[in-house]
Length: 127
Image 1: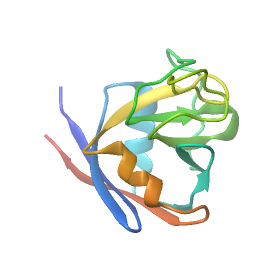
Image 2 (image 1 turned 90 degrees about the horizontal axis):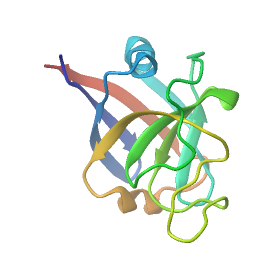
Image 3 (image 1 turned 90 degrees about the vertical axis):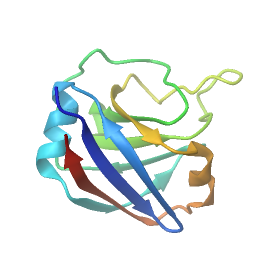
Image 4 (image 1 turned 180 degrees about the vertical axis):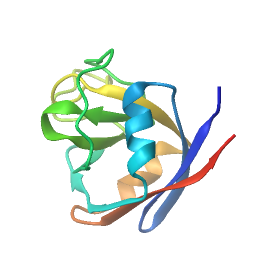
């Protein structure tokens, strides 16, 4: 199966990531590139994208650096630490999300990104 590599740019951060083999990840891949203003919620950046996907093996808790799709908000999410819903050190989205990939690099660099920053996601390669 091919690996889908993407680049996420949210000034001053530029980081690569890899999408997984899920149906939701494929739907996101198919609409790239995407550019939108990011919203900050704890240590999460999220923004609406032109994808409508059903819940797909949705998770209530995610790992540091995971990328996800939030079905209720048709939103792409970048998790780089705890959110207001987290209990302790866990990373808990507002409601279950479809995990679609993982950052390649230090997720906590996204703490430098401010609310309203333009976030761009683009394809690098499918190997």
